[in-house]
Image (cartoon, helix red, strand yellow):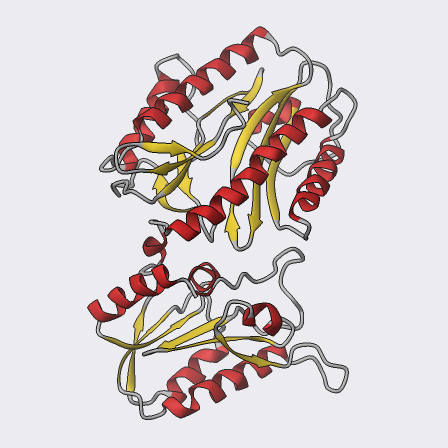
Length: 373
């Protein structure tokens, strides 16, 4: 269990006068327990729904399938599981998880007071079970309340992020090594994915924008069958999850020598990113950092990118603080933020560069090194 996370959650439950909490948001469950559900193959046909976390007083129980009870136990938390895959009965993961939730809440029937619930990820059939099992309690919506608590990282979380970001830096080196005219985007992706899993010695969930040539003007996308040509730009935005924590960085590489126009926009994006990194400090509002990055592009006469200027990373690959125009959240020491300005020109191609920084007491520490190697 993450003691830092438990303390922050305890402050919230005390402030809201909650007698108990039921969490279903997988990012929050991972943050609190360290258990990260496997996502390499998408939703399981055997499991009923996301792992649920029940907290009351000193007791914390993770409700998950028997297929995942082994990894879940490694987090050190109490685990209650249910039958997922079996050859002795029809597949009934949803029913089995619902009955396991009923069993878990059975001893709590006399509970009164407020129970905080994350409804957004909770399967609909579980709502009735919750109401029946806790007739004397009143339900309070917790959706959106816990997410901001994850923004400031503990020292242990920062070390986990450093490990994920080392994978990202290695990924950019591997892209440069594999890059040549004639290779397809999907072949490049295959070599890159194998490289990362070799480094991690395990399967890895990895998200990626990996596009080349004219597709770079479209901001991003999944790798396809396009074969790289001399002079092409290649945007590689690599996002792996290691031990439950996501890394993220982006590089733009060139097959041979870029055109003068591409070289110019690369320099402008690099300058904008450097300006943003140098500006990061506690007390700076996210919206002001966003405007600083956008204005660095606008001042040079280029169209301003339509996406965020940056975002936090942690148990989710996009979390607070979001570096976007509306967000007045102020940066605090311990926040880990990715910054990613870009320029995208339909007749030329696109460039995006991304670094990750840790907000410190008086500025920031650069956590990615791929642009200075």
